[in-house]
Length: 364
Figure 1 (cartoon, rainbow, N blue to C red):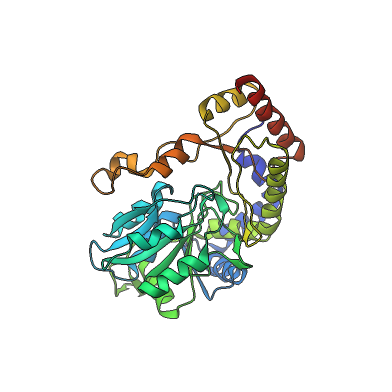
Figure 2 (tube, one colour):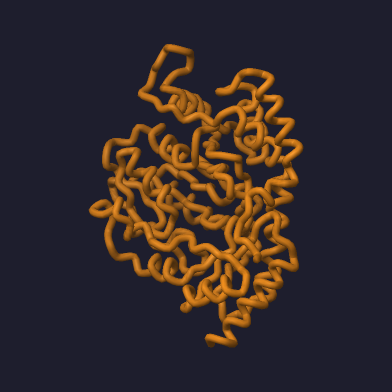
C-alpha cells in the first residue's frame, strides 16, 4: 500500500534530533515563551527575509490575530478565495469582519486577481491571499490592487513554507500567516503557527495580543488571547527548519515525475518560472474523481480530497456568505490529492502514475 501520508515515516529522519530537543527543553524547566520560541522566531524570520516572526498556537490564530491587530471596525469586508480551506474564512468571522468570497483561477486554484477588483468597495479593508497547495499567488497583481485601494494584505501561507514568487518568499509581501500542523512541509508534532511581518509596531502589538494583551507580567494593555507557540514545538520546528529546503526539493522532484508521467487527460498543476511551488499537496482534477479515487485505493494507493465540501456549502457559513460559486464547486467536485510526502520514493510515484493511467484505459 502506498500511503497518502505517514507522519512517523515523514519524521523518522529527525527522531534523534527531536530527542535531543526534548531533553534540552525538559532540562531547562521553562516551557512557555522561552529561549526555544525566541530562537525559532529569529531563525524563521531570517529564512523568510522578514524582520519579525511571532509564534502563536495555530494557523487559524495567526490569521485571526493578523486581522485583529488592525482594529478594523466591526463588519468591514475582507476578500478571501472561495475555494480556500475553511480556516481562512473562520478567521475573518472570528475577527468580527465580513468575508467576501472571490472565485479562483481555475488553472492555479489561487484567487483570481481579475475578479478581485469587482469585489472591492468602500467597506473593504483587506485581502487574504491564500497560497493554496503550496503555489504562490500572483503577487504583483494583488499588491497593485492593495496599493490602489489602500487595503491591508494578509498572506495565508499555511501550505506554502518556502514557496517563492519571483525569487521572494511568500509571507514577506504582507502580513504572513503560517500553520505548523504536522502534515505541513514545515510541520510540528502538534499544533502551532506564526505571523511574519516587517513593521515594529505591529509586531509588538501581536506579541501582546498572543499573551493576554500583556507586555509585562500582570500588566494587560490590550484585550488579548492565550495563543502561544510552546517551547517544545518550537524546539522541534528548529530541527525541521534546517531541512525545509531539502523537504521542498524532494517534493518538487516527486512533482516532476507526476508532471512527466501522468496522462494529460488528468488536469495537472500548472508550472511557471516565476512561481516556485513547494507542493504541500499535488492536486489533479478529473471528471470521474470518485471512481478514480476508488480505483487507486483498490490498487494500493491512498489519496485525499482537498476539499470535499466548498466553504459556501458549510453549515457554519450559512447566511454569512453567498451560495453560488460555480468555479469553486467545479474544483471541489473534481480535485484529488495524490501522495507526495517526504518519505515517498521515485518508485512510489511512478507506481501511482502507472495505476492512474491504467484507470483511463479501464474507465475512459
